[in-house]
Length: 261
Image (cartoon, rainbow, N blue to C red; front, top):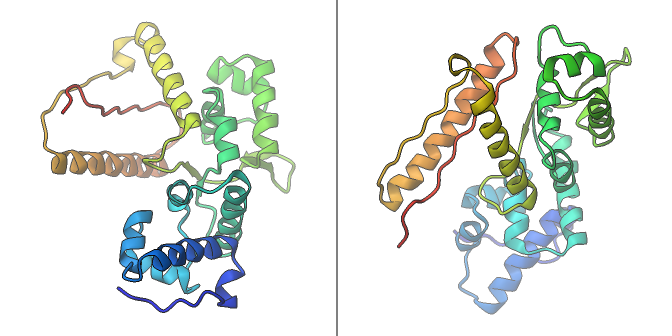
């Protein structure tokens, strides 16, 4: 696919993230005149048609792809912040807040300790009462810690006060990028594994379900398995949407190699 993209197109460069995408594309094309938009899209992990529409200003960069693209472009800290802010500004004007991809600052905050996601989850319970005492009773998190977490979630914009002054979640669902290295996400996985070990000893067998299996696959079927896990996560989200909210559960799925090339 070829696309005529002038370096001085004002309608495109008014968005910082579009400007950076174009800048990197032209840098690569200057080095190799045969470099195509399809090759650039493959490098960024995007569909070539999607990238074409983004660069022509017809659609914004999808929230789910922000971290991947930032990682690929190897932006400096300031440019990374401006890139993400410009995408979020564009998306916020056209995207309903049903689903929200955490920015790096929010990742650092709520992935640092396991309590944040638990507290966010209890907001969904049918009999929810937004008080530190009630959340403590439901989660066993110390009251002082609950209050600190609520203050942090409020300051980070993940919860807000509605017109009646009550604290509510700002977004229906929170997501992170997939397949991009992140120290915050690694720390969250470690917290989850530690919690799993504790619950294995604390929770009666009839109230938990721990299992694993081992498979031998080629690379193609390994990639299909990863997609199946993502599809399973989507199914869980739909269950969450449709279900009555009586208790909060944690579901963990791990996939990693046990043999090496």
